[in-house]
Image (cartoon, rainbow, N blue to C red; front, side):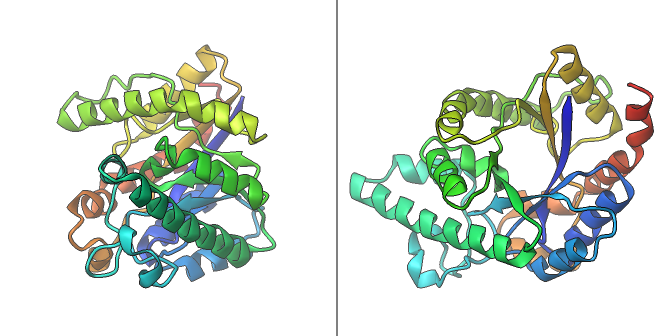
Length: 293
C-alpha cells in the first residue's frame, strides 16, 4: 500500500511551519502542503531547499479562508471582508454560491480562478526546483461541487499530476470519547464522502491521480497515535492501494493569533495543544509500522 503522510498549512506562520518541519525531519511525514499566502512561506521554502533527507511530496494548499489574497484586494472583492482578508469557510462559500444569481456566480468563479492561479504559480516558483505534484484545499474547499472542476482543470493546466479527493475510509479509535466535536467531524466525513463520487469522475476524466482513500477527517483536530494506527489498519483490511493521511502537526504560537482575527474556529484549531499530540504521534509511529501493526 502506498502510504502518504501529508501535512497541511505549511508556511502559515513561523510556529506552525517550525512544528511541521520537526514532524517531517524526525517522523514519518512524506509530504507538505504549502499555503501560498502564509506568513512564513519564506521559512518553508528554506526548509525544503536545505533538506539533506530528500525532497517532500509538495502540494499547493488552495486557500480562500484565512489571511490576505495574493492578488490586489480590488481584484477579488467577493472573497474578502472589509479588512481585505479571506474569511469564508467551506459552508460559507457554499452558502454564498447558492445565494448568488447566475451573473454573481460567474463573477465569484472568475475571482477564485484568478486567485488560485496566483497561488499555484507562487508555490511552484517559490519551491522550484522541487516539483509541486499535488493540489488540495484548506478546509477541503476544493471539494465543493462548483470548485472541484476548477481545481482539477488548474492542476492539469499547471502540470500538477495529483489532486486530493477527500474520501475517507471509516475507522474507529476506541480511545476517543464521542462528543459534539466528533459528531461534527462525522457529518463532515459523510458530506465529503458523498461529494467524492463526482470529484473522482472529474479527476479521472482529466487524467489526474488521486489517493484511493484518505484519513484525518473524522478525527481531524484530535489525531493521535491510536487514531493513526486505526486508520492504517482499516485501509490494510480493505486492501486500499493508496492512503493519504491528512495531518495537522503545526501548532501556532499565541503571538500569531492576529492571522485569524475574528475567526475563532480557525484560531482555536491552530492553538490547540492537540496539535502537539498529533506531531508526537507522527514522530512515534515509525516503529509501529516497521513491526507491521
